[in-house]
Image (cartoon, rainbow, N blue to C red):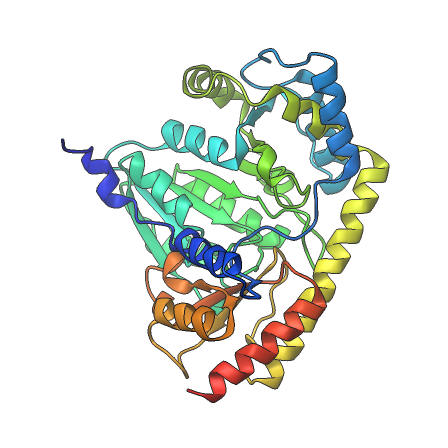
Length: 386
């Protein structure tokens, strides 16, 4: 039996294979330090868990409207107003099964066969793959320190074609952790709008910033489509809950898509997420953000001692994008050997970059400072043998 040709454009997410190998080594008794997967070692906040348990005990397990619980949509809109100064109508928010559900809706609405999509290279691979499944053509634009590892307005103008319909940003980005500020976001939005295109902004790591204030496209580009998630800042990875903020005219077709694609997001997860916006929970989450900043600083200091620190430190998310070209031009082999020889799991850059991924790796600072320092010691031993 043959499969759809669309799948030929979807590459494997290699970090998941590496995670499986790392877990196998762990099961065999090895002390593996996990720096590969984008999931910090924090549990879901207790207030969120308790709210989910109360929802289950109260029998709140029936379908919600396709766009989500009205109370949750209102809470998300309130968060935009309080945190980012953005006036958002709750009716413009669709609650989805993870940010992946939001990306699926956006891709199916915004592009079709033959349309071209601009996005940065490197970026989160599933962003490319969602557009490929919608049969769009991808124009991945190589970015680096000179543009702050982001797709800026000048690059949008330079690479826009007659068939380009969509530009996609990720800020803070995975894998680099770099951001666009409010002026840069507004400039990109203007460049896209003047060419009659649409702008889709991945803000999945929104709120996890270090030394800079978080900014949302919702505050400066009201016609942008914005994807967000309860997984990263809110610590709810396994609950699979996200949202899509869309212009008013797009809400009806997106709701129609949601009704047919997934019907509704998890009801208990939605009730649990309401607790994420309480003052006590937000205080806890800010404490976690400060801890991640401490981990980032410890990792950067250790990499500097190895003469490996990036020229631009990450401003957000929980990753360092590292150039290893002095040691290897095969990031997959580099990561495999580091795991086999020193039991440190990091991610090969070829997962994220169409160009240059073979000599980059991504390190997630998602474990304690003590474990990061142990990982750095092991990395130093490993590099000394090369």
